[in-house]
Image 1 (cartoon, rainbow, N blue to C red):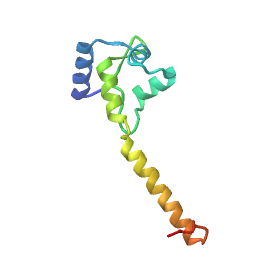
Image 2 (cartoon, rainbow, N blue to C red; image 1 turned 90 degrees about the horizontal axis):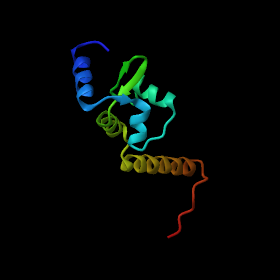
Image 3 (tube, rainbow, N blue to C red; image 1 turned 120 degrees about the horizontal axis):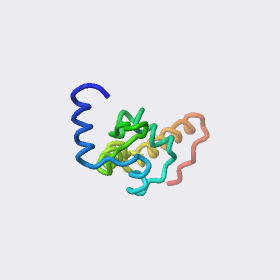
Image 4 (tube, one colour; image 1 turned 45 degrees about the vertical axis):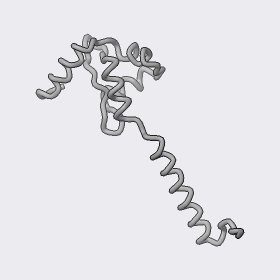
Length: 106
């Protein structure tokens, strides 16, 4: 970590109470592989990294940091349904263009 913004994050994490990443994830009810937890710390998901620090070779984070990460990476249910609906509609139009679409009954 470098830069003054990183120092602020580390100070906040220390105030919140640091614990090993896997322990914190289990505390909030997430049972993920250690490799997944480390990936969230190092690479993140969708442009969001799990706020964490490496101390003595072990990744540490806090419950509030995990909650912030989960909130930032959550996909709203409405978006998933809308995407699925749009995909279905596009597929139906494609099949109709091929002459394979459903016959409409009025």
